[in-house]
Length: 541
Image (cartoon, rainbow, N blue to C red; front, side, top):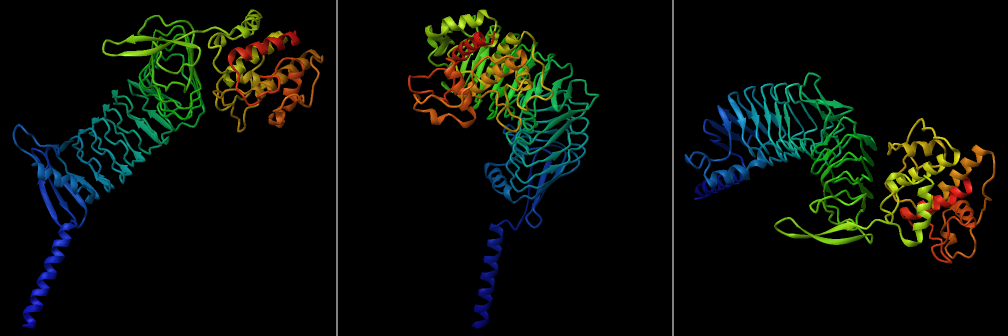
């Protein structure tokens, strides 16, 4: 009896062991994976092997009835987490879309020399796949093929002709090299919210693309295709040969300033989007179309040139002080959101829905108009500031204003600095730095897109006055060291700005916002900064 019970107990334990191990994947599995392809999986090794010819696919052919049943497909997908390695045998020419999508523990892949195409989403979100060797015979890399995988290093071999949209987006790669054979690159192929991609290089024999300083262009340099989001520069100026800024080309950039040079005509959808650092976008007056501006959360101001005939933007209302020069010529080219008290609303229909758009009312306030016009007649108002009078002035714009003022006073052009700030390519910023008028906010950064405060204005104006005094060998203004006690917020003036605020207030240049407040940390409007420049010009000349 004991022997029988022992045998029964042993059998029960063995059954339980087998069942438990089968439940946890301790089994062999083979099946269909294409018309002429099969797979075999062993849980002992964690290896999925694909053999056969032609296309490997997990998607059934519903016309012929061949392929996974719904239950088999569900089993294949539900067990994807077990796969540690994939070996694709010789003879397989194509990996269909989604075939290894979200195989999160897949860390090793061997591909055959016969492989011609990797389909869309083939290795999407393979979070353990850090490195992969692509075969020399490969011709097509599909859209999102490696999106959000863990690949940090990959070769794109000779023979590859097409790279689909989002193919390498958000992978932790630092560098990508394109062979001579690449003919087509779809939008967002190298978009990178991880900011790891530092440069894209191109074989010199490629007839379609080229690279300059790690930035990808068309061969003739008329289209900018991709700016690596991890490129370690704060300011960038688009080459004059570029006519088109490509789709999503500056997406997730870590730039502070982007200068779009003379010659550029079209800014394609999403070209300048989703940047948390971009403060300034300077558009040339050759730009005709801006097709989409999205979610640039730190952008302080966007000045649209009169040349623009089409604009579409998605900044949330109130996020950006947006101004433009002149009225847009067509009702389709309207602005939606981004304006403040200096605009009026009108309705526009695109044929399906009505939208409320904004038209700029662009003239100085009555209290500022006379002095503003006087400064303009004196020739110290840069063209970029002859608009958006009630928007806040940025540090980049103020540099232009104070350089124009200083050059007018000394009667000559100021020289450029030997080394500009790291986050701006502004000529005015360079001149003002060389003259000692501006010094930035530390670490050789000027923060060009930040709004300038009243106490910063005072300091820079006083430095400009002192520069002119030195040039002319005269004293033009009496210096003060303490702010008048009439101002209740005098203690809120920063220690580095006390002398400047006191001096300019005493001279009647910077007055209080009320009879008892100076509001030193407050930002200034364009019209205010210009009229203050006019008052200083009277002292300097």
